[in-house]
Image (tube, rainbow, N blue to C red; front, side, top):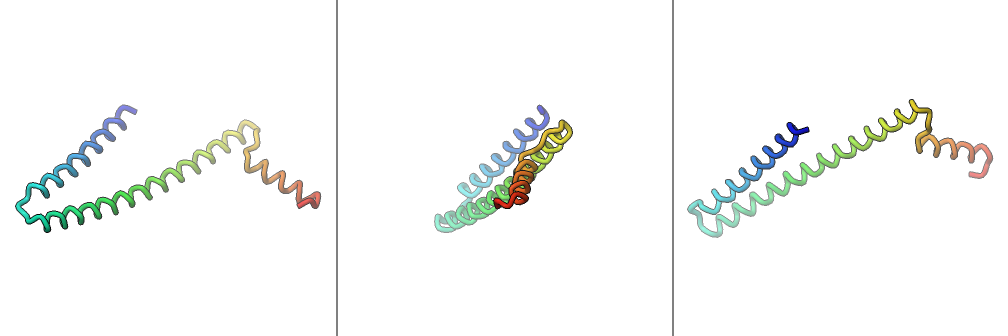
Length: 102
């Protein structure tokens, strides 16, 4: 656990340092104001695109983790002899269709 935290902290520091270094390089470079604003805008769009990609990847990973967790919980319930919610719903629907009320 501590090792993951150290890696996460390092990565956050490295990304922050890279962003600040890039911004400082742009601001201290001998360019005209118009060129500098264009460069900053281009970099901001690039960072925004990368952020969107990372957000989508994080969302996909979260969905995968949620599904695996649900499957894992279902397996544990099955081992303990308890029904999971989806099984109960399916059985209730089958009972209703057998009685002709659906």
